[in-house]
Length: 338
Image (cartoon, rainbow, N blue to C red):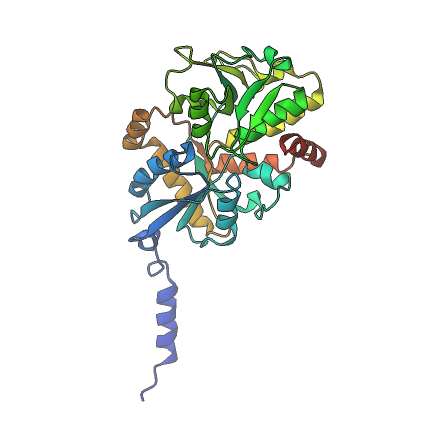
């Protein structure tokens, strides 16, 4: 058997290691199907956003991979987020969409949370949302002020969900009379119960409510009781919940709680994905957010695209993770089960 000269072996090894022979992003993603995993049930707002984006992402990623949306509902998105953090491949072939309470759930040490939000690779969010509580026109309480002496029956979608946590916080922190009825699998089910007269209200994002029931605010079938942001929003005819606070601690707790809304509908990759690939996918995400075809489809669904980059989400997560422990503990108690 003839021996191969050592110099030739070295040259061959160097050639394989050179950039020209390294696997390109196009080669990596070509022919692949990216799994887009989220903790929302089919038909929920997160699910609809995910399916909209999944149709348009392939054009802006080298190799044009296809996307498949996988629903993994359970425990207010915790089941899917745990899976992404602990079991998903760490190469960019699996994406996730988390609940915007993803940092709060970890900081408050909710049962079964098995992830560190700071270690995810944040890709971006398609929208920044305004959170509030809404009521049908037949509700006994006709304003936020009324809630201090008149009960409102609102729907909940389980621990860890803002739909459940918001009324609990306002009842336990401010003394608002919000009676929570659990058992709804998604916000749309609670809104349907409002339509049937089983509930008087629900707390979620204004964008989601408008999408579920277009025109309800305009025709007087429902109204915004309050929003959870510090200042009033000009285009929303409702007071800020901060107008009903009386102490600095109340304002600090609500500010911490509402910081999660700044994440919108956050999309992320598992930890340890190669940094260069994370950077490329962040850029592809932002390109999709400007894609004319994507924007046209979003408009037809009555969605408003107010995208934020992965870098912005990472900074929000970093700031939230620095919240003083005593505020985290108290907020967790106030939003938890009575």
